[in-house]
Image (cartoon, rainbow, N blue to C red; front, side, top):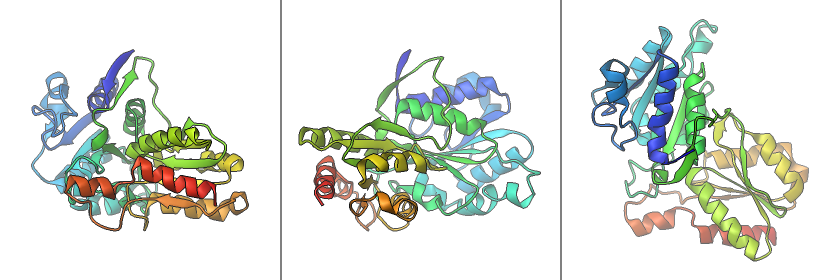
Length: 325
């Protein structure tokens, strides 16, 4: 068993996948000798060489376009988009090409492409480099979306994504890079669409991903000291989503709070609340709640960015109101 941080486990997962399958290769800006902009691919170039760890020009369109072509010819590419925000530059390749080729060819063409993106706020990267971009892709059938919030989940979901015969977007949260966890030779791939229950409770169900998963767990500890028992669920993937895990918890708690670092409109939290309300209306004893960010770009000022993100104290306050509604 080895303790490792969220940043370094990315290269471990990629290396294990490349050793297991010679068709796997990595492509992106500075992923080679430089070891990645965030040092998430350090050591891969030295082990696998320039043929399988390929640096590219500064062109997200070229990166994803090349990955699509390589996958169509039988390879299994891992494409890195340095910041998830830059997915807007190659949105056509992601939304109109990568997501649709298998469907439009009647299954004759597979696209086993993993697209890795550094995502999320809280690290001081300002409005164009901090957006919760996972929400942009919720309405594009054909793309799977993984949002790992722990070292173990990042390793397991990345291995699953690379082995999947369909395209998977893996969002790696920048503000979790220093988070530590443990992996070993026995660490398993994690199936897409399988949530994890972080803690069990009886009064309210809190659903959160990535950075907010950890803040929600801390809030649940504080609520427990007040006599409020919270279940915390991390879905780990947004597409597919483990609705049954949330519904099963609701059968016990009858209250739902979603914590996300995105504004409400068009978000995964808003979609979850809509589905739960439509499919499980009779389970609710109070209106479901979305605790999210303000409807503004992500601020650059550290103080404003902290205020923009849901804090532990805000989660505690809003869940307390929900439970006593």
